[in-house]
Length: 160
Ligand SMILES: [Zn+2]
Ligand SMILES: [Zn+2]
Image 1 (cartoon, rainbow, N blue to C red):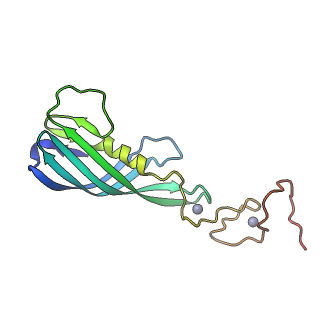
Image 2: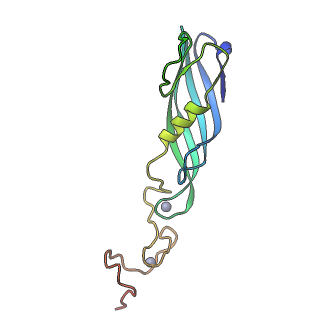
Image 3: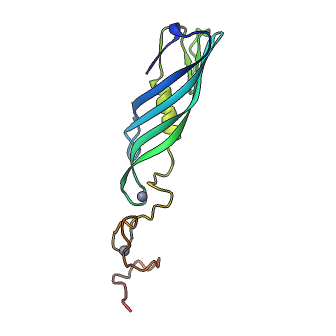
């Protein structure tokens, strides 16, 4: 998404964000991420600061039950556009050196989205996962397997 430096009023304004991004991240991370929400834009002398927390959504697969679900998360965004620095040093995360014209926000938004993704992809905090014995998705139905753990050799659950 583009952000036009030349069309910003001085002072504070609001920028609506609704973006669908290619994550560029390897599997199992989602290939596409949607961001939605608002950023506060502070157009200051020599720099523009975009700040806010966006809602993220991405198609994901649950680590426990392997079901598809939509992972919802929050992405904290902080982007600083420095307009009065001519030298482009090593680029810090979230810092863009640009004097005027359109700034491309795609990359910093993508980075913020990737940072916001949860470490563990769970369809639900209480996801019961898949039964290691019979493979039943225990969110959908209760299988009759005993809850005991260990004994990976035991093929047949003993019926009493
Ligand atoms: Zn699950
Ligand atoms: Zn089972």
